[in-house]
Length: 402
Image (cartoon, rainbow, N blue to C red; front, side, top):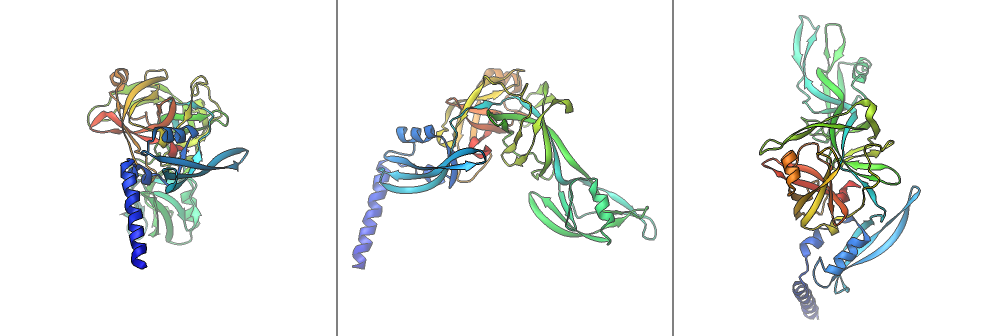
């Protein structure tokens, strides 16, 4: 009887695969779907109506509603079925709200105070051990972020001297970040001519820059921007946020992008132009709350968010203020990547709009976060430019910017 069961199983598998092939089931897309992702009801309907995952493949949604603070969010499980009968895969889904958001596209200034001290460079320290000499600290590299000394959290660069003076020993334990990985080392301190202990480093605790606003929630005024993290220039660490501010800024010039020479927006912002805070700095951008939306939000320009299920190759637009006013520019989505895991290079696109090419040469630094719109929905944000071809760029799915 065992051989009969094996034959039945083989016949079942063969029949299933044959039916799947005949139905053009897009296995690559189905099995690349992450275990948790976001989608709108219209995205799910569109997949079913247009058989985007293959003929006879349907998405079945089992929905539930949860309370998140003072609001309710829809979430649930999508079961992907062949012939609306045979389950192929099950994934968790967060349903995008039907409410529209304000479309970004304007440059913003940003300043982040890090939770920790960023190493700018090592230095030479005079010591008073016998004859005066100099010793170079070789433990740390430029870009490392010092997090704590002997278990005491470093909240600012100014605190380091006080913590060292209270250490009571010539050796301390330091936790630090290097390439976003936490490390733990013992460091022998250096004593200068005044008898004060030093690590032998130049450090700072803040970083400034510019980026582009992606969208703003109409009710809460919470925002998403940039599409990629704010990092230190040398170490590549994602700067941990102690606190931060965003500012409106004025475009004062553009350096056009060329092959192997990325251009940039040149903007000016001042402390008096503060618009809100920065609460999170993640691999998919900065997030926070706007207290003042003047000069940042256009209440007449709104759109819904669209998940990755609705993204397709072909015509789309990006919104940017590189001309001095917020405008839409034509692009072509060349590739919408299969991503089972989150990544900031979800979309590959080419700039088609002659106006934008004339102004900037394509995608330039400072445009990161510019919303990508397709079929009237914000489906992503600009993140990177191709160094060898500034007319081409990468975008991140808005799924990851939630």
